[in-house]
Image (cartoon, rainbow, N blue to C red; front, side, top):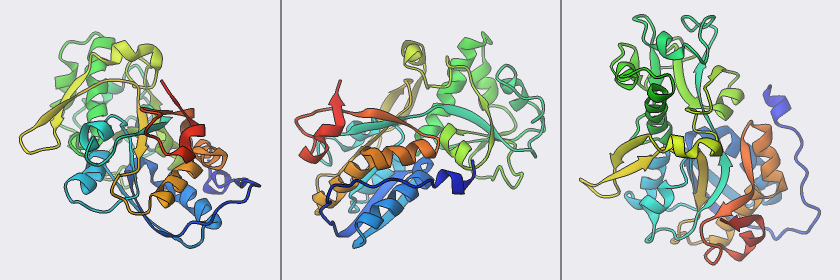
Length: 306
């Protein structure tokens, strides 16, 4: 889908909107970059006196800018909602909202070796070929990184191939992300579907049993586990496979709470949902809150507690 098509006109609310102002830093998952850029553009049309400073990064790295680097931030948006309570509760936040779902796909281009052969039944064989290079993100910095390894763990069970996880991990072409798939440095990369659509990438849709997209296979996904660095030195935390859900929060110590909450309200409203859908995302409607008593009043009508 071309950018011109993605940037369809978003209808603004007919209700009078209180004008907001100030600086709004947003630390967010890299996979949200283009979607949030569109959201920010439309939000600033309503609030021209707001300066939005968006910083994409791996979700773990984004959160640690707040918790370890002590940087001021209005909105944290993570590709794994559970990182918010694990790394930010109770000191930096006490609520989170789940606002979208995703799936892992295997991306490639017309330059990728064996691109005319690869499919959902043989991708793991193609990746083990001597002349193929494939990239993955750092699991200690990015949920996409540990979710990729979870996909490999689940693939071993799904395809009934003992040792498949280790074979992929030990493959000659397994590269911790540093190359560029478009330049030909890499043949394949694991990532989320929406950015693949946004960037006009080709991709393999993996079976639901391993792509971390389906509520139906929640128990199956839970067979996958990863040990990651914790919130303190020498600490670790266990992450268990589950359907991919994106979450966000407003840090407690951000001084302009009205501005940050106002931006979240826009994202969860009809305009923000339309933008997410136009960018290939799957917004959750209504969004899910962990604690309805903690959520700001402005957002209460757009969320439900499960």
